[in-house]
Length: 132
Image (tube, rainbow, N blue to C red; front, side):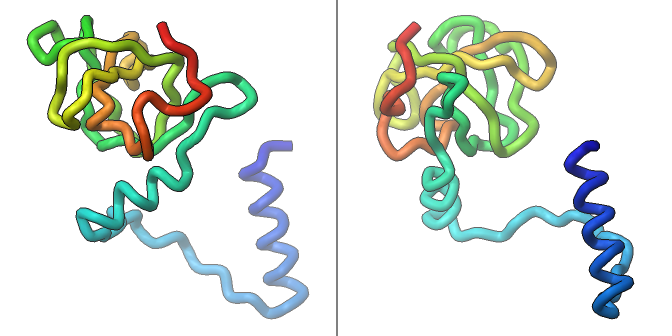
């Protein structure tokens, strides 16, 4: 049974037993954060998991490049605010003030290098993630 179905059944049961009112979900709106709070909150969720990937918040719309350089071609973007990253490597210095780039599968299915400035890590490279 899917997680979605389990949650739906749990909510339905709670509504029947406890008089819970279940309304249609509201339209999603982007979270409103201050510029300082958003990266800090996202970094708190950031870490290498059992699959050896870094799972971390990222800037929505972050570009993935062919090489570890803003001057190389763009392969695609990250359209969601939370992604996984396979490994890291050194490249050109980017807007984050270091030269760490993260390798990931972009939302269009292409692989690309994302500058660490667009990944909400506490430190770069992320501890426990392998170098590539």
